[in-house]
Length: 488
Image (cartoon, rainbow, N blue to C red; front, side, top):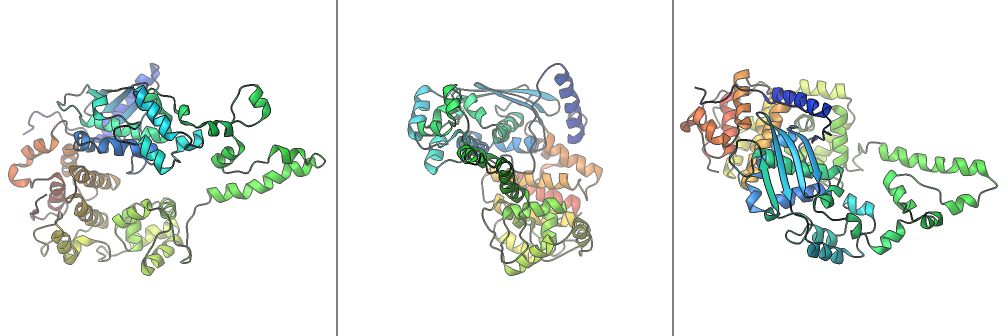
């Protein structure tokens, strides 16, 4: 009953094979530039996020791009090179596939319009590349039609894989990979569109970038002192002030070091707030998770909230507005060592009604009433022994609460998240056969959902992919014959 498929090869094994092939290409002189994503978020900066958001805004791409998110997150984009008008990449699938994407150059008239509308509003090259721009400039450069990003009509896609779709998962992964690459090198966007980003800097900013008289005489531009201080987080002694202290060379040499040292230390010190008087920030939560080596689900269990709540904390700007009980729990967690935190998690009861919704019929009923992926029956559900799987299922139901109300892209987000969870926990709770089936579903070329339906039979498939994953988890992990009965 193989349906003509090749023998199943796990993602990890395929990735190892791809690394070997890429090393061979590297020895032949190819400058390998892989895309490596840390965490679930593909892009973090203004330019990277704007690239991804721009492409997702077009209906032509909305239902196709999500197929590449899992691929780019799991490191399948082995190589990505951006040059003038072209993106070349190598993506690992059933084998290595070559992806080539042609991008039209930005028309001179459009570039002139962008420069004119941004004139005098961009302070420096540093501000431009870091995305520290005013709202008016952001609106200009990210405009859907007249901005810097290409429209679908200006993009031509090609992949060597056998998938008949114009935008296969490999092409989609590369397009998301470009967003991640722009995080590191935003100037590549201007190279891709064939324009010079320095032309956007105003005449005033160009003057600010010029420092000493000698540099002017030699025709060289230098970054101004204020820009260096901002970039490296240090204080630099002004030249005039130094020359005025000629009679005290020792003081001149030591004083700047004494002044700048505290600032450097302060910037590198983790900003973890442990006092109720200082509400924690997103960075404090991220630092806490990193220091304790916890997943969002682990920290959620420790504090007594859902993993979705922890994810939301880490994305918010400014101080977090927490309930007193949650604030107290988080402050207590901040005082734990890594060993203490892990021991506390191990000693927790298998089913905590504070954060594991799967054993709480009332929460499941509430989820179902909202039109989400919930189970038709909740009273006969057995408890799961593994607390990790309990937390995963609980959060999956929470994620589905949002995804099933939204677009196909949001449903794919829930699927991506669910896959990441199982990967992070090493498929705990699944047998090797079940793991292989689950992985095969996500690794198939072409219309994977349709092919997977052929394996399980139409009577076992419920419709939307999100519902199917919930159904699969319940049947395979919980061993329950319960099926889902909610329309997408």
